[in-house]
Amino acid sequence: MTTPTIEQIMQHGSVRSYKPDPVAPETVETIVAAAQRSATSSNLQMYSVVAVTDAEKRARLKELCNNQAHIAQAPVFLAWCADLSRLDRVCRRRGYTQVTEHVESFLVAAMDASIAMQTATVAAESLGLGACYIGAIRNHPRQVIELLRLPKLTFPVCGMTLGWPAAAPRLRPRLATEAILHWERYDAGDEERYLLDYDRAMIETGIYDGRQVAVPGQEGEVEDYGWMEHSARRVSQAVRTDLRDILAEQGFDLK
Ligand SMILES: Cc1cc2nc3c(=O)[nH]c(=O)nc-3n(C[C@H](O)[C@H](O)[C@H](O)COP(=O)(O)O)c2cc1C
Image 1 (cartoon, rainbow, N blue to C red):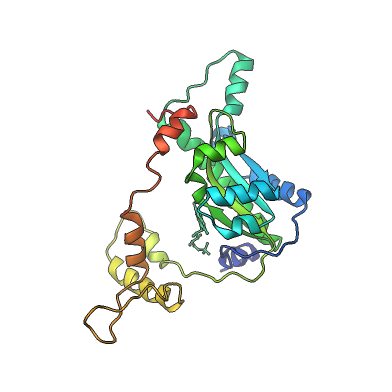
Image 2 (cartoon, rainbow, N blue to C red; image 1 turned 60 degrees about the vertical axis):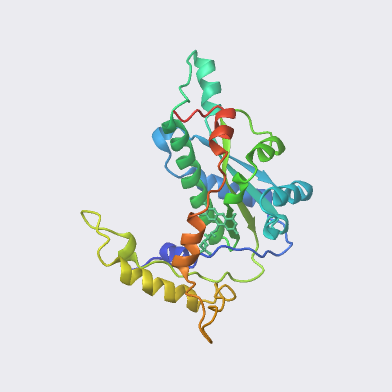
C-alpha cells in the first residue's frame, strides 16, 4: 500500500549541496505555514523559527556549526527554537506567571519545534527543495543566541539548511522496520540479525569507504567498520556537555 505522500517521504535524503538560486520569501512562508498545521501540545505552539538569508550571517552560522559548507551554500538557514517566551508575554498580559522551570516545559517546546520542522521538511521536499537538519546549532548556542537575538525562554534546538538541490541526495538505508516496530510489548529478540543486515547494507552504500582501515599484521584484512562501529564510536563520546548551563541561562531550569 502506498500514496503519493508516502512515496515522497520514502525519497527523503538530506541535501548538503545546493544551487545558488534563492528561495522566494513567499516559499519560505508557505513551508512555515504548512509546518504550523502540525499538532502542538495543547495547541500552545511553543516554538518559533528564525529564517536567515543574509550571506554574512549564514557564513557566521557555518563557523558556529562545525564549518559545515552547506550552511553557507544554502540560500536559507532556518533556526528552529523551543519558545516559551511568547506564552510568557501572554501570561503577563493576562496577569499570570508561567511555570517554566521543569523538564516538562522544555521537552514540550522542543517536541513542538521538532514536529513542526519535520512537517516543514516534508513540505519543502514536495516543492522540489532540499533540506538538511543542523544539530550542530547546539555546538555554540550562546553565540547563536546572540547572533539571532533569541530572547530568554527560547533555545535553538535544531537548524536546517534549505535550498534547491544541486543533485539528488543519496538515499541512506534504514534499519529493518521490524527492528523499530514492536507489537504489544518491547521485544529486541531478532535484533542481531537486523543489525548485521543493516551493517552490510550501509557498508555497501560506500558511505564508510576509507574508514575501514587495514588490520595491523593481517594482510588484506580490513577493520569491521559499519553502522554499528560508526554509531557506537559516536555515542561513546560526550558532546555538548554545557547545554544544561546554557539552558538555565535562557530560563529553562530543567528541574
Ligand atoms: C536532529 C538532527 C540533527 C542533524 N544534524 C546534522 C548536521 O549538523 N549536519 C548534517 O550534515 N546533517 C545533520 N543531520 C542529518 C543526518 O545526518 C541524516 O538525517 C542522517 O544521516 C540520515 O540521512 P538522510 O537524512 O540523508 O536519510 C541531522 C539530523 C537530525 C535529525
